[in-house]
Image 1 (cartoon, helix red, strand yellow):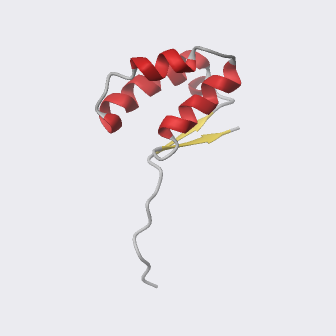
Image 2 (image 1 turned 180 degrees about the vertical axis):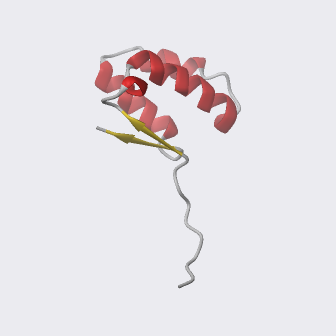
Image 3 (image 1 turned 90 degrees about the vertical axis):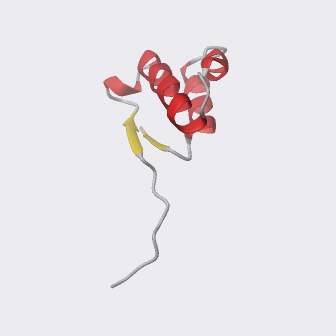
Length: 72
């Protein structure tokens, strides 16, 4: 069977594992901001830190949801 190319997410992060803690997500956000968005990502990090963990995750998803799948 032949199918059309599909846009796939490039990274999966398990939020229940060590890569899902707040510091790891902020570090990943910096890396993705540089490589995918062409910015240092400090404004995103500042926005992530304005609330609780759920706010941090939702902010991460808002900015990087096209590149990353978050799993619970």
